[in-house]
Length: 217
Image (cartoon, rainbow, N blue to C red; front, side, top):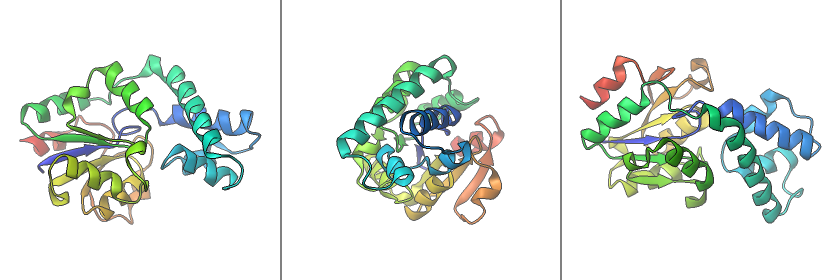
């Protein structure tokens, strides 16, 4: 592979339970919902306003209200997760090895820049990535391929030469729609949840197994 594209949340850092908790607090305690943990987890993909529309319908909030709620949710998440913020085991070594080999890397995430900056700057890993595609940079969210196609374009690489690292089925589906293979990090979903997707190269709980060395050598 000639380029790597990483989803962020759940793929590079194991933070999805903190996102779920922040969403559930917002949806139930502040907005009067009664959603279970599993109901919230199932809907946590795409842009934050899209999550709110899926949970409450298209007429409940204005765009301004959804943007405000989105930032409040992310502030809660960041505050709760900061003491635990760390890359998944083996990822720092993998990023450094790929960087030394000159393999171009990008982030393709549905997160807003506020959250991407929070991770990259607190962990001091921004220099590894030649391109960042956030929720603000696309019109259509995953599973639409726009995020990954834009990342490949910014890396000056064709889709066939990219491998995507993802943790959710919708993200792997987006990679397939972009014509890219994917590696699944099983922090958020179990392997059987990806069975219908034919573009998966490998499953792993983290970045420590020998498969990742083989991607770079």
